[in-house]
Image (spheres, rainbow, N blue to C red):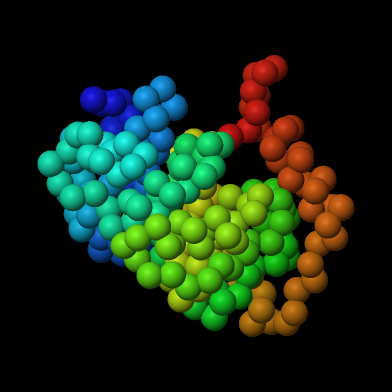
Length: 221
């Protein structure tokens, strides 16, 4: 079932260690299939180099396993909570990428100090509250804080990103760590200036609607 989606999900998981966003078995990606409404997610505790497409777990929105022999990610309930409350989201990523998680550790959002933050996120990267793993609590904390952004830091925990596709959510996860690293370096040298909200809006609009290769009816994912 959903063979092509499982293969794509497995391939995108390889982007997490490649971009230094996870270690060992931490982190996960899930995707919603719009046609069936089913969710495909990484199995729990399997090392990235050992992941295979057929190991990806398919569940319904209530968490019932539709197909798969392994236990789904321990973050499954939180992913499902996000999907149930955000019909526009079809991809969710969770990482513990070091620089972004350092901001999360001290409960500090990342202001719009860089055009890259304006481009990808359209505003500051917020930091939500603390929540324990294993239930819907993390999913609720994500949605309580994320607003219109595609990324949120969770206090003392890590990073969640969302997108209209799983690739868009993965890209947002890569960008969170990249800008967090640059902001951390800048803070060692002084206090950066925030970009004005009007300029942030213009930059974000350009990135979403003009930048890149586009067909007449396409919108940047």
